[in-house]
Amino acid sequence: MRASKAPRGGSHGFRCQRGAHQMSILEIRVASKSGAYSVHAGSGAAKKTAALAQALGPATGVYLLSSPRVWRHVGRRMEASLRGVGRVPKVLFDDCESSKHWRTAERICRALVRAGADRRALLIAVGGGVVGDISGFVAASFLRGVRLIHVPTTLVAQVDSSIGGKTGVNLPEGKNLVGAFYPPKAVITDPDLLATLPEREYRAGLYEVIKYGVIGDAALFTYLEKNMDKVLARNRQTLDYVIPRCIRAKARVVGKDERESGLREILNFGHTFAHALESVSRYRRYSHGEAVGWGMIAAVSLGVLAGFTEEGDARRVVELVCRVGKLPSWLRGAEKELFQEMFADKKTRGGKLRFVLSPKIGRAETREDIPAAQVRCVLRHMGDTAATLFGRP
Ligand SMILES: NC(=O)c1ccc[n+]([C@@H]2O[C@H](COP(=O)([O-])OP(=O)(O)OC[C@H]3O[C@@H](n4cnc5c(N)ncnc54)[C@H](O)[C@@H]3O)[C@@H](O)[C@H]2O)c1
Ligand SMILES: [Zn+2]
Image (cartoon, rainbow, N blue to C red; front, side, top):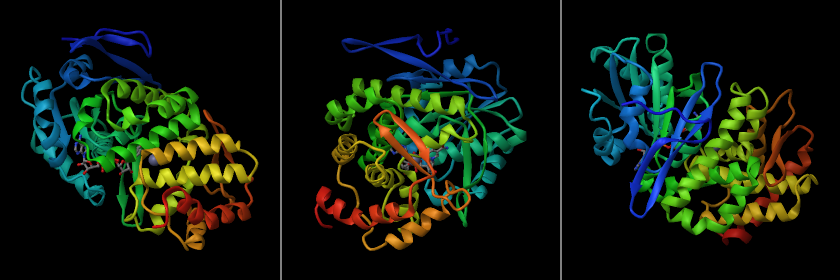
């Protein structure tokens, strides 16, 4: 079986009948210096894994990389979708953030050697961002590089981490400090795989979804405003619209700036504040997505204060973030630590704070001219903003 060729960004040959309506799987191309690849996105896409794997050309062996938890939820489906490929050895490893280090990568590489993998092996990573980042790092390093397909199973992984080729592991000194840019050969994004995702993980992904609307897709933002209830209910048709829009938004950015030398920075909208919140709270209080939720509220507040963001747009962003649900409370009384942490952020250059701000929904730019006093002012007032939005903790 082979995947049929499709026009760029269009719908490809796979169409499956489900219930009354026909589903189509979109093919979204992502440009990359190491070779363009496609994201195949839509309900039912995972069923095409065998065909898409075979379309990449002959492999001496196909190896699944996943975590025990992910496999419990989606393993049976993935096994069914790989029937016809032959024996597919699996390597399972823990996917908690604290397992994202190179000893895990080493264990996976050794398991691959024992299973007989060679340079023409094909790895299929099935899981969230942790599985994807470790597997990407393994794929980049094992025998100096083997082919990889991502099958993302969290919303964060579907709209963010599986696209763009960033791979890596953590060091005790910090997150993602060791890694490589190593794009996959294909990504298979099936919203049906999200059905078992815990509510908090799902909502964490929604903040990144909103981010794409703010930085590059005003129509997506408006759609989210109109359809947030359906999005929260994981309505299949709604996700079949929303997820590909996010993939396209990310593909547009990383296609132009794969190595994060400029434009890619806009993907960090809300992240300067978010990283500070995560770090000062020692990664305990917020999931990354939740910190991004707060970060976006802070970023539009800063934008308004700096005279860069329209108040009406800022209000829309805050309202949409709030509709996702109640965020864990803001870190009151930690302005000083948060401010210091922001200076340690990798977006600081030459001692200047860099912020991604949005002049208008659908657009974003990096700014270096925001006075520190305004940043402090936003941090000081966020506790009150938070109380207004979500009530006192
Ligand atoms: N490479 C990138 O560009 C990039 C971008 C964003 C985030 N990341 C990285 O991604 C990681 C976070 O990824 P994440 O948010 O996907 O979380 P995750 O990988 O930690 O997964 C969250 C939890 O959900 C479980 N899970 C996954 N899929 C499931 C499913 N379908 N059903 C039930 N449970 C499921 C996992 O076992 C895990 O317990 C971080 O390490 C972050 O640094 C990387
Ligand atoms: Zn993020």
